[in-house]
Amino acid sequence: MDMVNHKCSICGEPRPDFRATCLDPDCHETYVRLMEKECGQDKIVEDMTTGKRYLVPTRFIIEHGLKVNELPLFPLVNNEQ
Ligand SMILES: [Zn+2]
Image (tube, rainbow, N blue to C red; front, top):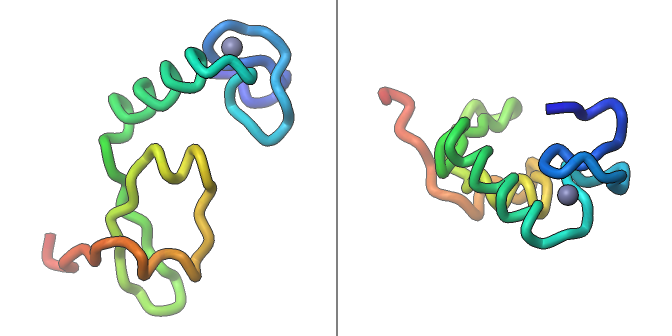
C-alpha cells in the first residue's frame, strides 16, 4: 500500500492528498473492506488524556478521520480486555 506517491491504493490512479483511494466509490469500498479485514471491523482507540479506550468502526476512521473529542460517541472498552 503506497501512501507516498499519491496513487489510489486499489487501482493506482492518481488520488487526492487526503484520501487513500481515488474518487471511484468502488475503490473506496474495496479499500474499506481491505482495512476491515486487516485491522478488524472496529479499532480500539485510546484517549491519551483520560486513558479511556473506545471501540471505533474502521470505516468511520477512514471516512471521517477521528478527533479526540469525538471518542465519547463510541462504546468504551473495558480495560481488563
Ligand atoms: Zn482507484
